[in-house]
Length: 379
Ligand SMILES: Cc1cc2nc3c(=O)[nH]c(=O)nc-3n(C[C@H](O)[C@H](O)[C@H](O)COP(=O)(O)OP(=O)(O)OC[C@H]3O[C@@H](n4cnc5c(N)ncnc54)[C@H](O)[C@@H]3O)c2cc1C
Image (cartoon, rainbow, N blue to C red; front, side, top):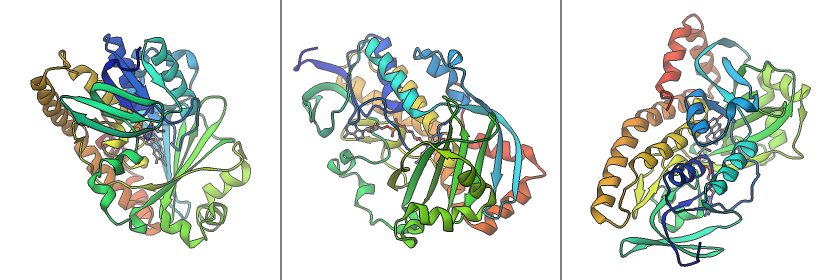
């Protein structure tokens, strides 16, 4: 494609939302640009448990999941900081695959379908004028009729667009960090464990390559108390949960050092900014304990691809598309995000987490109902 070519759609960010959207639009014959600042394959802080609701969708993107022999996760164990736990069968369940593997597979598939997928390229500015976008990046300027923000939970673009939530003061307790390791351990293939500790929780479940993903979320404040030393915090706080101490002590950690991200926040965000259509975490981040953020990003990609205007140059079609996407997105996700925010606040206190587990333990149907409140049907 020539440098000055006008794309039907430019997608900023090649995570699950951006990659699957690029594939779906390319399958419809659209001219698509995808820009990712990193170089594939790369690791990402994520629990790597994917709700089963997305299985068919990922396969429809051309990724033969059934041939990859991935672990199918059908059981959940939730423990309180003191080790008290419940275990039960999951309704829909999920499967495990590392982002290193899945994002790379999708990237290769996007290239195969003719997407101009550019890696190692950072978008630095986006402007909308005369019914089209100009995208400034480290690899030059691109033009498109539509631009999609699939750049994740925080990006330089949020600041460039002066998105409202970037102007808020950052308070320690609402500011989270995420930490991830890949480990080799003795752990059931079909189980996801959610072990709580003071002001945080840690998920463990199997992924591809006979490895397990161990990923936790806690407050920035928790880390600050231990001089911003991850190891010191883990030993002082996470190890109080006997299940977590056992896993850390008895597993082989496959990274030299943990993968860490900071400034994770869960407040609502506007869905459309200066005609840029957001999806995935750029539109709203669900609490990771729901194990559903990846499916939400892909479901939004599916929605956009089904609503994408026939005539990209038509202003009336743009207006209609923005209206219908907002309505459909809110119908599908607003309640889930609200429920996720409530659950996020409930976990992390020793007493409350213990109480929740004690109340839910005799009623497995209730926990599955709660899980369903943050999940959707297969698509
Ligand atoms: C601790 C933690 C655990 C989680 N565990 C799970 C889980 O087990 N299951 C689940 O379903 N969800 C989980 N999630 C949520 C899940 O990771 C996200 O919801 C999902 O990755 C969102 O996908 P996305 O495509 O919106 O963004 P991302 O996957 O984050 O992709 C965004 C991409 O945009 C790129 N980018 C950013 N800025 C620019 C720029 N200026 N130019 C070019 N590229 C740019 C980034 O490099 C990145 O690759 C977890 C989240 C956290 C924080």
